[in-house]
Length: 238
Image (tube, rainbow, N blue to C red; front, side, top):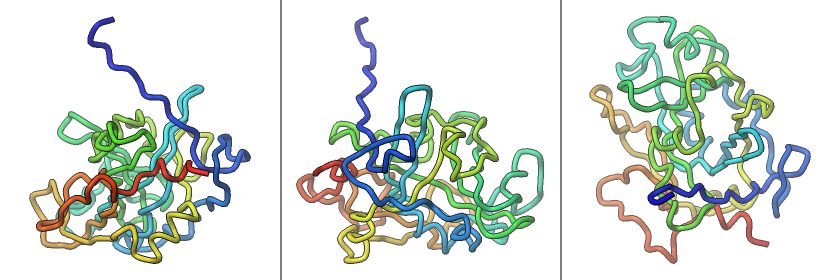
């Protein structure tokens, strides 16, 4: 049909066959729930470079997390700052679950609950680097785009982040990503949060500057030229 949008072919992620997929790399560690029992500003940068995977029937979509933001009950931009309610109940729950909400009635946003039960704390997943090539590098560059790209909605609210059977889950950093981050090659950046009207002064946004999939860069930080951009497609190279 004329004008129809063609869904790109997603390559399998670089994880061992025992996780239900295959790829050219092995050794991707699982994400430990213990690592999420910390304040959101500590967890947020540690989620960079990790994999977010979404299985829908026979289709498996995935990407590398390249931008995150932290939110905490003690500051005014957090959903749990003023009160606990049915809509934000998950954010007050056990760390290690997804907190999915709808923003302005338009798009979904996916968060990871952190810290401790009874205290609203979470990390917003702001952007993914997709293994689909240059034409799709901005397809998940923003929290709403990320959820639309992977088909994430409120049905995933409250689900464990490490349970692949639920259709949406996290895994740790692939070894090559961890090595590149350790050397500084991924250009880890920290800046103020964006898209909020309160608490903007807190430097609680982190991103990997080497990726072209960042929603918005810090003032003065230019996007790297195409040959120097890092892409998650590189994880599939032999």
